[in-house]
Image 1 (cartoon, rainbow, N blue to C red):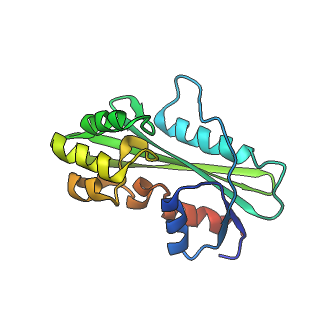
Image 2 (tube, rainbow, N blue to C red):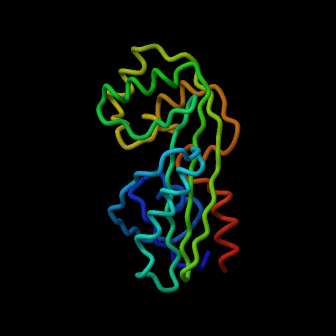
Length: 187
């Protein structure tokens, strides 16, 4: 990949996925209000926020590609963002326990004034998680920066997820296969 990429994310998981894809990038962060209008679907929310993040760079990029993303967790019509407190994280994981939820990642690429956005959806099925496992995970792993209060690559994901329908890397935070196809189109 010979494009110069600006990753507008502090997520170590997204950074690692790009490294594993052999994509060179630099990180540039901007503060962006991540609120969204009422009535949007989870897919629309993820793309809306990812696009909002890219718009913060609109005037500043030349030939580089700005890559932004937003991952949300949705269950039974409820959006689970990042937890506000450890108790909130425990509550979220209790909600996910024994259920299927959707992980939606919206991605936006800004290149030469043009916005390209897309999303991916993965269904994640958790087994019943005992309270002791949930509390131990929150205490040890501090999942305060993760939508839905968990990382699939961490203990709770490794022992609690029974199956995934869709992209694993989407659940990590970046649908790499779709991203790669879109970056090739930008040549």
